[in-house]
Image (tube, rainbow, N blue to C red; front, side, top):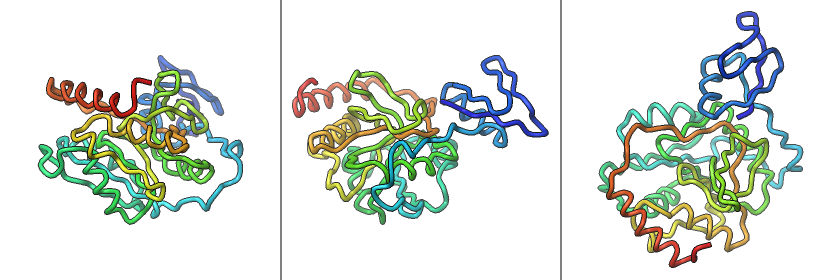
Length: 260
């Protein structure tokens, strides 16, 4: 993550074990550390500006915050949602929480998400895990980029490139094209007519990768968008049954798309 430090009367420098900052300096720090610095010193540390001019003129009118829906499936203890996702949401966005404690209402993520997307009042829906953390400038940066991207099918904050390397949006100045996204955050546009495959993926794995492959098959791009966001550590581990089910649904994915 690239941050810019600006001095104030109260804080003219920042000299730490990991970084040394003077007025106007740009520094590279891990995403979690960067978010900590911006929270602790909101008048000093800012994300590097995204050079949207390099993306060209908008292809449509920029979204307003009220034209964005944020959707989450509530499963973890309430402190996760309150600590991670909720603080970063602007009050203008529509927020939909699907309560699914112990998977009582929905037995698959695909079904829950399709339900939530249909229920949303907006076409652009940001699905985010409860432990996703959006920085305070992320939504502004997202809006600037989204209106300049042509033919996108899915957007997110982290994904895997065509070289199978993990790519975080916080490491880039502009959107970065990837093969598929991590399911901690997948942004869709309902107008594209692509839905999560609830017939094939009947549990909580591979639904997001499949969605990205559907986009690729239709010639629609999949990108991580530049901006300060992170997938936090919940402090809760998955059990063996979770990993066993992952293997089953990976086999279903390979059967559908092949191993490529």
